[in-house]
Image (cartoon, rainbow, N blue to C red; front, side, top):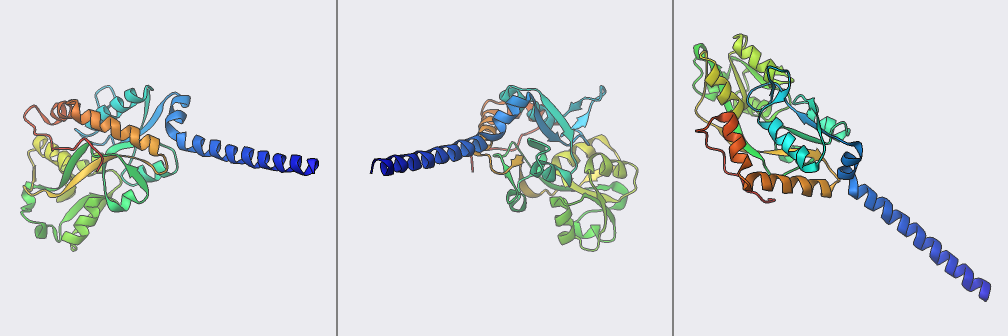
Length: 272
């Protein structure tokens, strides 16, 4: 009887120890990337450095721009230096999913399709799609794009929009609208392009040969993207964005890059 009781207690202890080990493993997995980032000593953030003012390389070949400023502030909040990777439209999501990056601050539109594979913060910026065209191309409506050579980023919201709105357009794909699409427009090798309004408004203001159509299509939130499965990291980044908006840093950063008279889109500093 005594031996049976000891065996029973040992079995219960073994089960308890196994359950505790599983809980520790689960907690370690959930603790996740914040601890991993801090142990590594730096955070890996993907940015798109192809075009002003969102992201580009300055005269010293250093990353610069609106998104770069946001990424630096986020790294400071984490308490570690940042290591940037210049990412293409196509690669930014896959690099998160393969854990080559911790975060992506690269003008990523929050869409239902993307939200199925990555997590997004609350919006830290907002924009829509706009059409930019050579003045000589006489593009006044979306229908005028049919038969024209139109550059878009492969796999972007602009790509899907163009196929639906001007199915007979001659699509010229680029993995990075900026700088590749921008260069095609500057060299007059395409008639028009569709991209984020903030980039195209800035581009048209710097190039007399180009003009943007007045209509903005959609009202697209822009979020910081991360791989799924780490609620602690998502909560941390959401807290950072909320503080970024409420503190006035968002408005200051927006006007820094789009001009003192620019009116920043209204953002809500709370989870949707």
